[in-house]
Length: 383
Image (cartoon, rainbow, N blue to C red; front, top):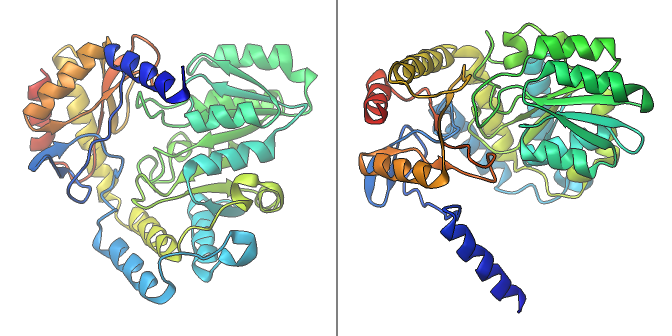
């Protein structure tokens, strides 16, 4: 049997198991309402949490920079692709995250790979929350270190691993998402920071879903929990609450310079376009100066969680704009998602391998552009 026939057999089996994924084409800009199949529906699945992808100031920054700099960087960062706006954005991000330095990369995935590979290699130990983003797990597997996972948010098991294995390795690196993308819950960062101190470990967190949303100034879960000084390295994205594209690493200048010199995910790729850098810097400015966006988002999240729980719906331990509706079977999750779409709500089913077997769910994600009426309508449709 040839390779294409093997692929077709696999795809047919995925379809039989209700696990086949297909692309859905959106026919409008991203927002709380989008056009799908020629009709407008309420979108409860995007990650433009603060509605900055189409914010007037962010768009203007991108347009102005495009007029001046064009649409492509024209080179990798180490050759000729570092332009003034890259440097300005990195300075902006370091100031925002209150770190010594920052470095931007074309995607969040690449940022996690670059950060993990700089922190750990052969002779080191990387400890990951089992539900960390795939980019972290893949980076930990690829970096040459020994990688172990601990059960989700289980500080006791993390401490046991450090106690049992930590002394055998040159470095101990703890890596966790701060806000988990499939469950909307937050890592116990204060307890993890205590273990970091006790076992002389390095702590890296991925604030992809928390940057701009959590914390008094929108700096993320570490700020919200009061542990920013305990975090050694922060990875984030420009493509969620900031509404743009790309990833960043914030931390010591020594880490930045190490990645510039040896980070394959940084070196061997074309730089972000300058227009994206300008837009992202404008988005950071909005995050810092328009706190009402995240306050409104927080109120909406609490309102929807409360309504769903009153209806007996399992939302897990969500404390954020990401709210899972846990169902279990993939076919049941698909059927509910289809019924909601018929009623005018876009809430896709999340199925294995994105989530573990028998834990399929709907993942609701809210944005600051939603209204109380929007979330009340969704709660009524689900209840």
